[in-house]
Each structure stands twice: as C-alpha cells, then as structure tokens.
Length: 432
Image (tube, rainbow, N blue to C red; front, top):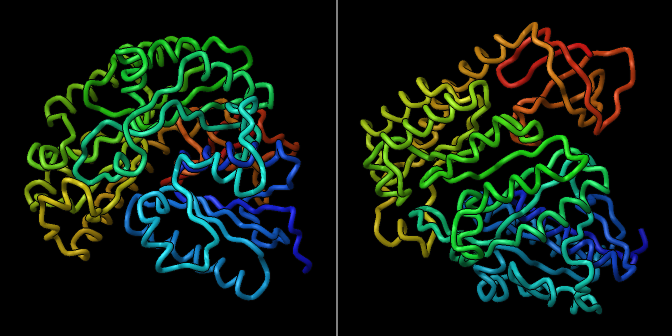
C-alpha cells in the first residue's frame, strides 16, 4: 500500500476527555485541508498521532504498547512520521524521549498549537469550539472544564492536567449549538470534577446555571451528567434533573468507598454518613433515576473490615450501574509518597470480582423488573439480527444496552418506543 504523506491517522487512548481533545485536534487538521481519520487499522496515512492515557498502570502500559506498535510500523516503512501527545507524554516526556527515541516528537496535553505547527500549519482561532466528531453523529461529549483542584491520594490527574479551568457558559452554549446543528441528540457533560464547575471562573459552583442554559438550547432531547464529585454536592441540580424534560434521570457520581477510614486516606472530603445522606436525597428527589458509581478497592488501609463495609454498601445501595477498579500506586501522588501499597494484587482482584458478582445479581434483578415496560430508546447501531439502543438510564460504552427485535428498519440517532421482553444482567431485550 502506497503511503499518503498528506494524510493523518489519529489514535485515541483513555477516557472521553481525551477523545474530545482528539476531536478538537482533528477539526484543526481538517481546517488546513489535510485528510485526517481516526483509529484506522488499515490506513495509508503517512503520519500517526497517538493521544495517550497516563492515568493508571494498565492505561500507561496500553499507551506504551501502542507507541511501540507504531514504532515498528515506522521502521518497516508503513508510516513516515510518528507523534505522541496526551497524558502519558505530558507526564513522562523526557523519559519517553530517552527510551523510545524513534518517535519524531512528544507533546503534552495542552500543546495543540505546537502539534499543528509541527504539521505545517497555524492554530485557527476561528475554529476553536468546533470538533470533528469521533463518536456516532447523534451523541457527543461536552468537556466543561480542564484539570482538577482535588487532592485525592490515588489520582495523578492534577499533576498531569493542572488546576481546574472552567469554560464560560457562553462558550459551552455556543459549542452545544454547533453540535446540535450537526445532528447531536445526546450531550454528555464531562470534566474531572463536574460539580466544581465555575468556582475558578465565577467564584462559585455554577453547574446549575450551566444546566439551565444548556437545557434551553433548542433541539437537544438528552443531557447526561458524568463525573459529579460527591463532596460539597450542589443539590440544586437534583431538582433540575427532576424538572427538566431533557436532562436524563441519570447521575454518574464516583463514591470510590464507604469506609470512613479509607475515605480519609483517599482525601475524598466526604464521610460515610454524608455519603448515605446524599444517596437518600438523590433517591427521594428523583425516584427512579439511575445512579452510576465507581468504586476503588485495594487502597492502602482497606483491611477486611473496611472491605466488608464496602460489600454491604454495594448490597444495600443497589446501584443501577457500577464499575470497580483496583488501586495502583501512582508516583507523585500523596498516596504513593505517604502510604504503603501493602495489599497483594491477587487480593485486590478477588475483591473486585466479589463486588462485580454482587452487582451482576443486583443489575439482573433491576432489569427483570423492567420486563413488560415500554420506554423511549435512542438507537445507536445495527448489530447482527438486532438494532442496539439505550434508554435515558444508560450512557454509551459503559452501561447497559437494549437489543431490539423489529421487522422495520430503525435509524441510528432516532428515538423509538421499545417494550422490554427479556432481561440479562447487563442488557435488556425488547420489541419496537
């Protein structure tokens, strides 16, 4: 296959925040009339740009493996240039340059101007706020702030991305309007700490004001909230979720743990009792809402008693959606400097499996109660004999899906009413 020197293949690793960064970069490349594609495994692109993740051990290893894969591509003459950007590159730029010198240049997380310059162009300010969507055309992520002011013991994000920098409400409304013009039906709000939005820019938590503004954008049926930090939670948004028709009855809120001892070591700024009170308020104000949380097991200080508390928490809270991760020591964090990572990896994995097994039964029980219900479903794609969609209770990539039987063709990005006929632990089946 001949190499196209004027074509660029962007590879994105890690979270949805990284994905947005790639979309911004690709729009700038596109504005220079340079052909750009995303994550193509059979590409003739002469240049590859890898947007890396450096959050936890497994993600860092995946980033390094991907870099080495494309180093081999370069050595074998299948690409001409290889650039690396993103979190891993921001944090370990000098080490990477020494260990993997075959990469043409390393860039940090905020070096989009330098990347464009290296490609032979200039940052076009008139296109800031615009993106070349990587997601399906009917949903998009909206990154409302960059960085984080929290001091969680296990998290390196503040070291990588710096202090919180909120975008203005006006800029975010304009970005949303552009996305709706492109056909976006579902907007997923993301940040490292959604609930602290605006403290740096407006001197107060302004997520409620932002939600009110976004809910007023015409032609936007669904708004979904991710990464709502539980400490100092702005309860006003619970009433907005309840009262605005286009804000999904869904809340992603990473509690991480329930043991006071572990929460203190994690520097989460919240106690067990405060967590339980917040959960009760959510269930009371928006009954029927889907709560998604993430938990971290194996953190230093999580003895058998603390883990038992966590097990009981999962059993009684009955989260609709749950993800579990194991602790990995991240250099530069407070935990790495002050706590001994003394829980064996095998124990961490067993704890993760136990929690997810409990969640499997809970999720199946919740899904079984929905059999016979009819709900509005957003169609994502066709897969084999089924059309695949999601309810307002499910975020793309991470949550349940609805597998739909129908004799009629359904269109991705459109809504249809589906009656649920069968339940599995993490999926529903239904008929349109």
